[in-house]
Image 1 (spheres, rainbow, N blue to C red):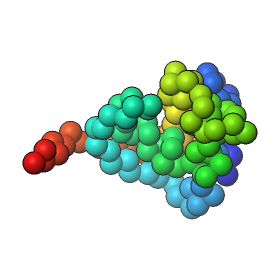
Image 2 (image 1 turned 180 degrees about the vertical axis):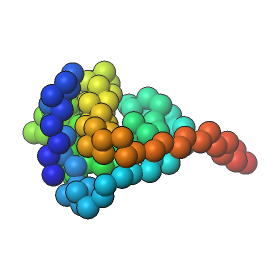
Image 3 (image 1 turned 30 degrees about the vertical axis):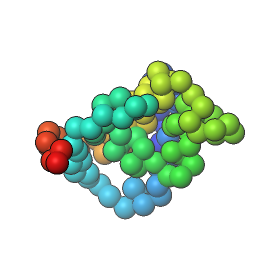
Image 4 (image 1 turned 45 degrees about the vertical axis):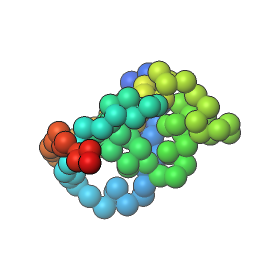
Length: 109
């Protein structure tokens, strides 16, 4: 399923799994986590990469390109693409979306 991102900075469309159309609301439960390429993850990563179709994941990682390596783009373009994609999912649910964020200390033993 394709979602438009008219105000997208890096990408102008988002490719999500087709079953997203089966839902009229979403609960996003996230925990704070760091990632070398994506920075600090959480709801942003879940809405962008988590909702993306296989093609959409490659599209976001490639900042709008899918022909080269999906890990071939720079970090700024990648995180900007994630923000654009996440905004389209948030807009799709038209306010019928709730966010719960948790900070969890992992056992380091």
